[in-house]
Length: 177
Image (cartoon, rainbow, N blue to C red):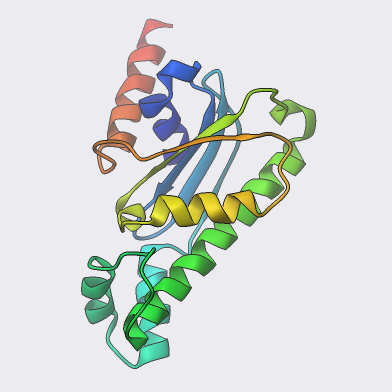
């Protein structure tokens, strides 16, 4: 799972414990890893391409045009056009769905997911690249009741390489076993 690869890549300082979120064009992959072992994983198909499609449908523009505009948007700024409003709305819906499923993952995992420490979240992938994505994610996450405290929302220095880096770390570790 790409989410677990993100945990391996970015959370060595917390003993590979935290939540990895990889938001790509086709889907969002999420994993809660505890000491490098996945407690739960899931994927959601509504991600970057879905934002393009739904915002295009709402505005009458092409998905290609929306995609270009999506890469210019700042999610913390008030939208000034119909296209910006449509893109921001789809981002909010996508993040809400992701956060809802994170909460469900913790509920379903029960005691296996219990932690007394605040959990860090790492957000990577091209769909998470607009400025303000991490703030919107944290704000949405903080609005739900979770069985733990939220730690940092981490945006890696090179978020497009986190999955590959995590896969390399996983491969190196499995070769040692």
